[in-house]
Amino acid sequence: MQSMTTTRATPFAVSLDEVSQSYGEVTALDRVSWGFRKGSFTAIMGPSGSGKSTFLHCASGLDRPSGGTVRLGDLDMGKLRETELTRLRRERIGFVFQGYNLMPSMDVEHNITLPLSLGGRQADRRWLDEVVHRVGMADHLDRLPALLSGGQQQRVAVARALVTRPEIVFADEPTAALDPRSAEHVLKLLRDAVDEMGQTVVLVTHDPMAAAWADSVVFLSGGRVVDELTAPSAAAVLARWATL
Ligand SMILES: Nc1ncnc2c1ncn2[C@@H]1O[C@H](COP(=O)(O)OP(=O)(O)OP(=O)(O)O)[C@@H](O)[C@H]1O
Image 1: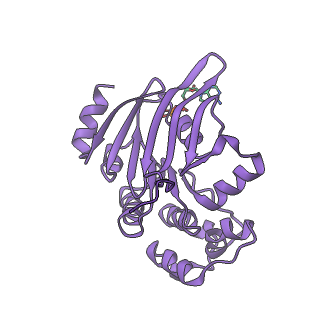
Image 2 (image 1 turned 90 degrees about the vertical axis):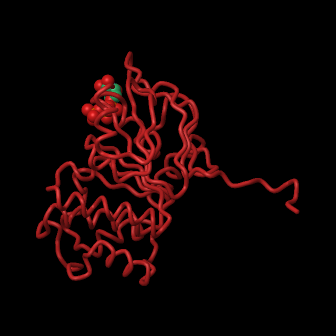
């Protein structure tokens, strides 16, 4: 029998409780409460200015909200000092951005291991090999980013996001600058990370086709969560989008 003192672990990788963010007169996020279940793939959609970037920045510890609580697992991120938050972002959260954000002077391998080396840590060789193979960059480890296509650069960025085995990966419009085939490759990598590695992924996108790779789509409007669509098809996402 379970002891009465056993506390059950939260089912959420990240949870937001009544989170608000204001910029002067503008309320970009308005008392949003949401939880990202461990091992789930969630897309966030909404019209321009609905608060998607603000949501992602608050949920990932890039910004501190003006109100409410954001937790990574059970940890209240608002209680951390800046240096602790920086370390937590580097070691326990993965990021993929639209513009790849690779270091131009570093080769592929060093870009991938950057979150580890910044923290003075060595890569676990077997895990690094696995991640590198998954993203299909094993033959390009000594290349500089400038010699890679956009799709390849984004796959390096995905490997960099996975190399620390983070508790959650936030991807902000990761396919917006890619051709459809490269975009599909990147989305499949994120999907596989969820299905095969138990990774938790949050994807901000404008693209219904991209959102259809997720387990559910969260719709924002006016800084609030207004709907959720589970097992989304691109057509269903588009139909819901049209009514926002
Ligand atoms: N740093 C800031 N200073 C002032 N206002 C801001 C700032 N960041 C966002 N806003 C405002 O907050 C609201 C939400 O912006 P946000 O960028 O989160 O929306 P979004 O849904 O990501 O938009 P888009 O799809 O165009 O990127 C908008 O009204 C925006 O103008």
